[in-house]
Amino acid sequence: MIASSTLPRLMHDAGSRPLSLAQHEQTFAATTKVGSLVDELDASGLTGRGGAGFPTSVKARFIHDQRSLHKYVVVNAMEGEPASHKDQTLLNAHPHLILDGAEYLAGLVGAKNIAVCVARDNRAGINAMERAIHERARRSLRGPKLDLHTPPQRYVAGEESALTHWLDDNESLPQYRRTRPHVLRIAHAPVLVENAETLANVALIGRFGAAWYRGLGTSISPGSTLVSVSGAVNHPNVMETELGTPIRTILAFADADTDPQAVLLGGYGGSWLSGEHLDVPYCNEELAAFGVSVGAGVLVVLPRKACGIVETQRVVQWMANESARQCGPCAFGLPALADGLNHVARPTRDAKQALQQLEERCATIKGRGACHHPDGVVQFVRSALEVFSKDVARHVQGDACKGSLESRRYATIPQLERAEELIWE
Image (cartoon, rainbow, N blue to C red; front, side, top):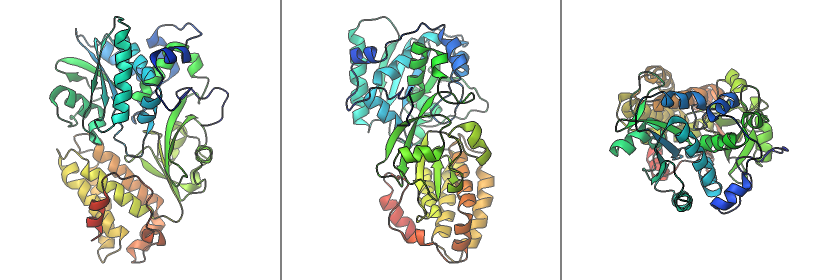
């Protein structure tokens, strides 16, 4: 936890068990009277914490303005990002804070139904949310209907259009959207999808107001955020930090390597940032100069002894396996990127040609997918080729770096162990 007189917020009074409804209401008892929620959200500057960073108030107004008798608010606690544990942390500590935010937004947009989505493999999260919904039902208060749903645990299943598609038609397939914002629907009802952390922040703003919320962070990126830190760290953990805190300071508080080779920001659709730039403040306006963003709130720390190309290849292979395979860029382009990185990571005679093809394929794939999944992978690959350019040059010349021979890996790749063996054969 980053030291601050006004932190923690999201993680306030977070113990080993979820707070009951009574404990929750006592812990987050409002001491000030705030104005209308939509005005407070506007003034707060809150943006989505799921990765896209879209202004929450704009998204809510858009659904509010849709003419329909039926609307949905969808709680996205899917957390398909392997390096992220933010949703799990919130579910295990403050499920009622998430539900408060969902109910606030349901009232704002006129939704009669709230669909809470937790991945079916996340038994602890499901249990915590089941108890929280049951406690609320016992209060017999009027309000939107709360239903818990358990979609499959897949990377793309948490993408908002794929999640809406699953709720509507039981298929976790992203929907093609030519323009944004775009009205997602369950049956004919407009849907507002928000990430669990975003909703927890909505609840805090609804209780304490925009001025309180802006007491932390920067003028452009106000507030605090949850960060999942893994890789070269003594114990992977989730921290709450003030936006604008230098990345190196976050790593120090996380008991991670503070002089690494690089850090992956934003998740597996994010970008590598060279270890030379870790004194940059952790906020989008400062990170933009380096072509990176906060994204999904992930920091994967890569020590100097590791090989960034090997780690990148492992992630890309997993991302290719996790795609929906409903368009060419995902079905053919991503496996081709993984194969090209394999040739470079374990130098072969074709490494130089593979590198050239990688660059060409990145240009061909970008912007042509049915969703942004392939774009994220392309961004990730391009950042690796730039940040690890010296290692790439050595690999292409047939002289693999020492890091590629290390047995330890630093990026979390679920269910890839056997697939990885096949890749290197």
